[in-house]
Length: 52
Picture: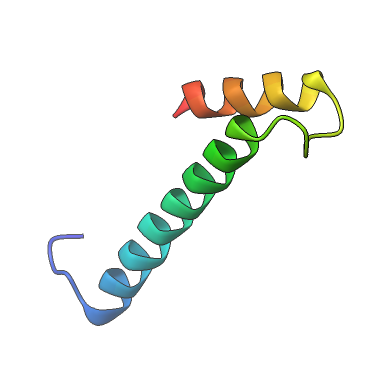
C-alpha cells in the first residue's frame, strides 16, 4: 500500500504490541522454569523465540 491510512497504522501498532507481548511472555517463562510444566515447553518456547 503506498498510502498509510489510519487503519494501517492501527494494524501496525497492534502487530508490534502483539510481537512485544509474545516476546516478554516467553522471556518470563524461560527465566522462571519452575512455572513451566515440563522442559519440552521451555525448549519449544525457546525455538519459537529463535524463529523470529
